[in-house]
Image 1 (tube, helix red, strand yellow):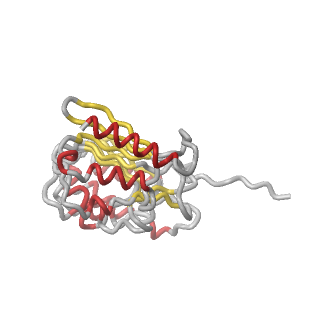
Image 2: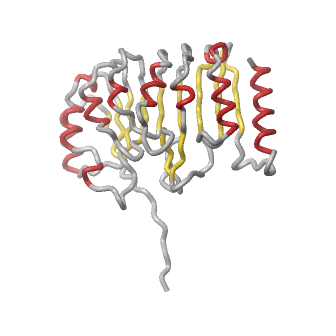
Image 3: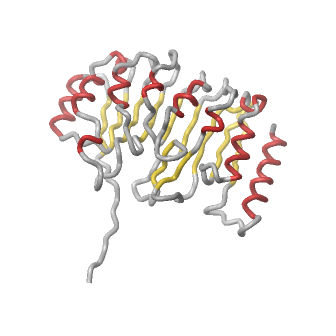
Length: 268
């Protein structure tokens, strides 16, 4: 497999160098790290369906003999996109027959508050159940980090050993907190890091998770195993945050008052 990875690195480099000079900050590339008999893979570049480098990498991991030996996959890239959106399109994997029996970690680039383009999972602006389809192919996954909230199908998966979940809501939180509170398929969950929608300029109050939904979560059986909860971008006030902590004192609850940046314009 190592020989195939080296060959894939060369193909990606050749593809990226055909039209423009290879530029270390923006050009797609692949890193890999042996972990015993397994591999930790990191793809850097564009995640949309127009990226030939991304397509080649997905073809590689969709071969079952390769998927069997992957223990970790991470995806990142430059702050590039279209119409303010950086898409990560995993339909090719989600709709394949491949399984990742030994995969423990799956990380997709999260949005930084200074980014020009928001990272999301999806071909367009919608998640469309892709995260659930991916998770069903990863029965041993322990750590998941994604820039979009999954839809309700994520909570219809059979009991899963996921322990660490970090996600951003993207363009739509899809009632994630409410759905999580009503679920029982993540009984090993220890750590949750959740960021609500990031657009403070255009989003209305209805776009954010309600205080009532958080109350249900804090008193749910889902939170009986959770020991750490980080909340970002919420519209909750200080009194509501304190009330949540009082509902479940077994949880280390951290609130991060993070807000999306804005340009400072000089008007003459």
